[in-house]
Image 1: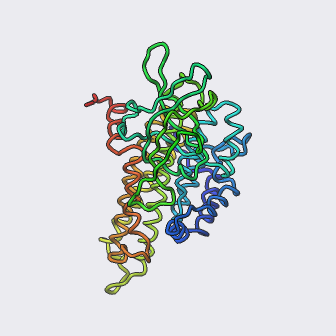
Image 2: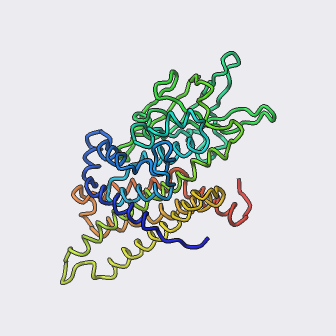
Image 3: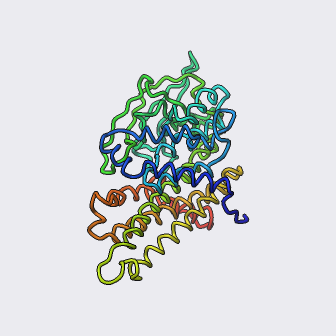
Length: 388
């Protein structure tokens, strides 16, 4: 693939979102979290400006762009210190899946609201006993022979934002009538559906979006709750998972850039001997290295987004995994070096970096661990045999 630099339109979008993020910033997000709320003001303004639905079809109120544009929005908000995690699941995963595979009725019902931010949707795939092995998902859906309804039963864990989402796009499995084997399918489950229960998971990680364990006890859904073709299976699933990886990379790159900017500003001003500490190579070089690694991660993220938006799902899968891996590693190192640059000040609330130590590790773990990405690359890219 030939290297394509950002278009002027992309540069303008980046600058506009950066300006929005600057008006809110880390202090706004920290205060919102401390008060137990959600960044509604930022979410609403981003929606009003058309940023939340920039990837969704124009026919449904979106911007007609793709994951490339949406990743710019999340990265720049992250770089300003106020990323919106629900962007990863609501417009990126759920919006993309519905736009690609939903029925006309589902598109009419959900896409306008997802685009203008008035409605949100969570994404439920992770299970307590399945981990990274999606083939072990036990949430199952069966037909009621009398009504044609679906009955969904199972458990999910670490599902973000269920309490504020209007519905959750749940990954379940149905039985293939021809083979008897189970295949993945996606269902829209309204928040108030009978039998759909949630319990908050107390996390050390402080975030605006809370984490939940879900229990689905014979949740009855109409036939049209199924998204797309019952036989499409993995194609539909990965239509959402690849954007999720790209957006996680954007989240991590933005966070790394924020931490690095705070460290650079400190290193320019903090004077211990005769010169600012940033004049010393022991301080300057690790910061320069982090900048390089974040820039390289962004290039891979841009490649992944380009491939996905061009319809190359296979190429996008490889690149999205690599982008997520590179961005997570670069983010963790940037945050660690930023804290170290500030010394004791890096652990104070005044500078607001210590909380990022925990937050930065999220991209290493979710939505897929770095070890599973290395497995993917070693098997799919390098052609090495599996050990499992």
